[in-house]
Length: 109
Image (cartoon, rainbow, N blue to C red; front, side, top):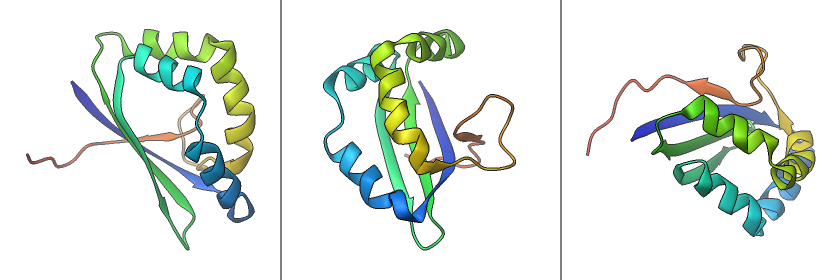
């Protein structure tokens, strides 16, 4: 299992919409997330900085392959047409990233 964190900005005028979308997340998108070996997926909001912090645990053995499969899923693509306009990707993100992946520097159980 690999713990993964990521961050992205959120447009202040889209916070309410983003919360509404996630309060009623589409079941087929949630199934795709689970099918991509992701567990314990959580998104946190920090205001007034307007940052979203995402955390998940990856339980597979081919992260890039699983993410490619997720990106091909038509229902997930449709979901992203609603969520992506709410977000403000960081200028420092890597090529091709929407959310910026973070380095784990500490963990305790």
